[in-house]
Length: 113
Length: 113
Image (cartoon, rainbow over all chains, first blue to last red):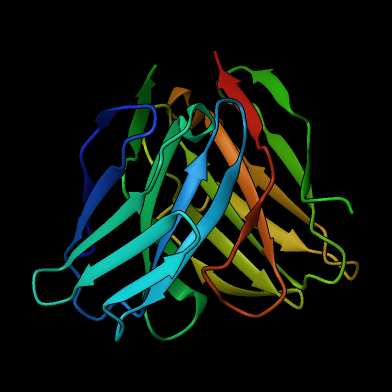
């Protein structure tokens, strides 16, 4: 079955880099996603990576994928107070919409001044 | 440009009642998905519709049903409400048939007493 695991909390100092980790179990995942949820809001897509890629960089965001270990990470450079949110890792399966996205429980990113 | 809009934003029901939640996708988006987010958990896939056809269904009982209208808006219906149905119900739209690049609304917060 599918399962996406994330640590629940991460605390970093403002200006440092944040690294949020995720592991997934289904090797047939096609795309892996990072979503951000701020308090009282819906989810916002940050970035995604295709399963045949190792890395993707988008401004302050870097996604690393280790398909052998089924490990995904999101690095946020120069973390700011506005980055405080819950970050969800999600995977999608081949074959269309039958299964939707499978989300982890989310990592709460806490920024220390 | 208007994002995904959902109504109502908050509602309180009692066990055994019925609820209808509504969603308007971003203009031009033909796909709508519904997710349930229980407090402290990641979103869980309920349904996906594209061009008024059901494309996928998650592991939810038959008390949950949905439909998509010709204008691509959607309704989620839940019958015989249980306490465990208390959650944030998120609607997401996308332009293409199943894709993980979803645009989420802010959700409808359902409390079942």
